[in-house]
Every structure is written in structure tokens, then in C-alpha cells.
Image 1: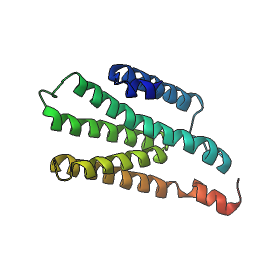
Image 2 (image 1 turned 60 degrees about the horizontal axis):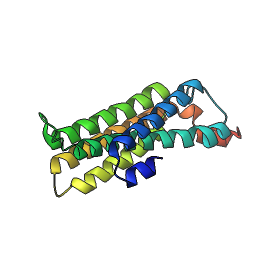
Image 3 (image 1 turned 60 degrees about the vertical axis):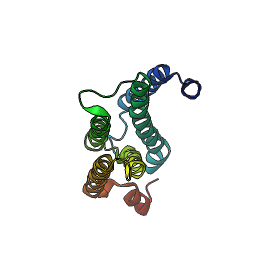
Image 4 (image 1 turned 135 degrees about the vertical axis):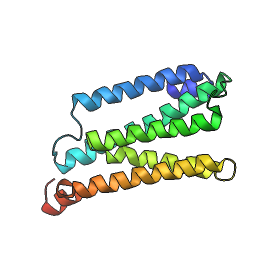
Length: 167
């Protein structure tokens, strides 16, 4: 449904569909208590990781869809301006990813955020350096936070479970 809405430039509808997807994934996350208990490796690899990566993509896509919708309404971002709103949206996404890391142990979702922020930096490197610098800084914050969290929880990491033969 989202692809059809997006291809036919129904950005308002695409935002509603994306928000429905996001809310559904959040409900799934809460109901199944994802990444809050010490699961076997097969659950982590085949259930948690795909859901985490998909949630990471949907967060990024929701932020992007909202921005596209506002542009389609000719909203110029006042009082912050378009550059200010872009930076604000990147900060909102970064905070969401940080919350997922530290409240739900979802470092995998933040990897998608890192990728997206680097893509934003590359796109704006020559045109709007301020956006590029903020995107790189946010990606670094997510990377360091994910690495720190992974190091802190290394005893129960999937690699440790693999080495112990816990499948």
C-alpha cells in the first residue's frame, strides 16, 4: 500500500500508512518483549534481528515521509527554515535510536540510522555543509553508543553464545 501511495505522490496517505506500520512494529516489540531477555541465538538471529532492522528502516522512512509531505504542502519550515527542520528531524531520529539502544537493547535498529545519517551527509556534503556535519556527528554518536552498549553486554552477545555452542 505504501509503495502505491508513494508512487502516485499521495504523500499524506503514505505518511498515514508509514505511521500505521511504525505503530504496528512498536506494538509487536512491546507484546513480544523483544531484546529484553536472554534469548537463544536462533531467536536473536531469525526473529529479533529482522524485526529490529525493519523497525530501523521504518523509523528512517517515517521521518523521510513526513519531510516529503511537508515539502509537498509547500511548508518552508518557519520559524526554523528548511535547514533547521532537517537538523531537528535528524536529532529526533537520533534520539529515537538512542532510546532503542538503551531501553530495548536494539543496537541493530540504530545501524540503519547510522547508514541513513551517512547517506544524508553524503547528499548534503557540497550543498549544505551544516546538515552534513550534524549528520556525521549524529552517526558517530549512534555508533559509539551502539559499540559501548555492545561491549557492556558482551557476555550475552550472539558471538559469545555461538562460541559456547548455544543455538
